[in-house]
Image (cartoon, rainbow, N blue to C red; front, side):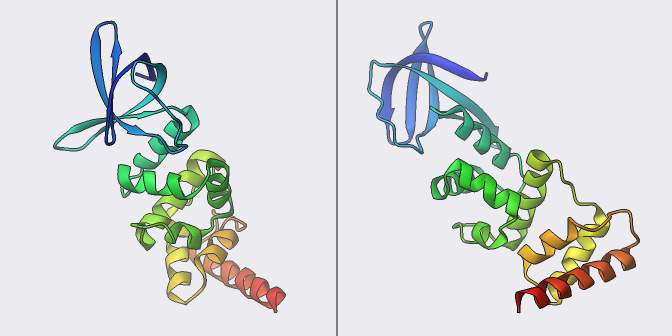
Length: 188
């Protein structure tokens, strides 16, 4: 189901019940823009179904783009619904897209509940989805090596994207180090 149009029957805490064709549908309601909704009002609710091994949840959004961003986030294996909501509460959608495009690792780490591993996953997965950029295993190995050497994550991401991913692992690492040293020299 993409969306449901129905009459609001009940709003309680984070849940909303919509009636459509004499059937009641319960959703966890995510109203990030704090739009006012009223019982007995007809609304269009965009839906995401999220399933764990124990339960199935249905989330409802008044905004289609927020629903899509939430859905993209919960598709990442280390991001659950609470973390996705934390992200979308902290950043406006256009700001969030800029963070992903610029690979601003530090801003992602500033979100409550996100550690280094999850931040990497978010950047890798959403760059692939939104900007058609995918890191291969060699690039990930180079990333991990450079990170262990103490380079900033944001700089590593920006440099790795510039180098031909078909190079050997050694060449990738050498070229990355060369570009990182140029980048650091230019910043002086």
